[in-house]
Image (cartoon, rainbow, N blue to C red; front, side, top):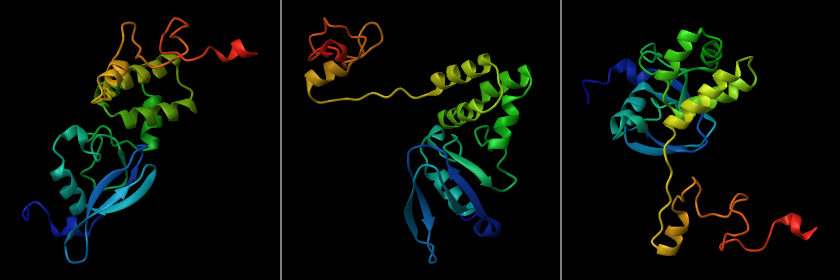
Length: 195
């Protein structure tokens, strides 16, 4: 690794912002060069040297899990090597606003390139204050649904696992307003029944 880290990488201090709602743990180097871990909570700015970022990125097993590339961390002050060409999810708020107002051809190309749920969520939040068409907002929702990971909860208890399994019709066994009164899991009635 000594050949990949230059003296400039050790000195350049980058600023990033965790735009995800969840926390990440990153590796920092102390004054002696020993590694220590730091938790970066959601919606927090932090500074790392280019060397520390490189070390963190080298330790990630899957590229899609790299917070510096997948849009979880937004670049604020970074070296010229970090661009939207090398990382299409590394968009500033100003760049997102430009994309929201881009031509239809540029819009469709960006929708193909951006594959980070965090970046797309940020784009949707910024779109609410911008003057964009409903079609573009729906494009953002559709793209977010495509790239959002499927979350599954597993239980060692077979009854609980059966309850959590997806049911025909798209729902889970959880009590929802659409389950209806015929659901044996439902306890009690609707709140309107007690008025």
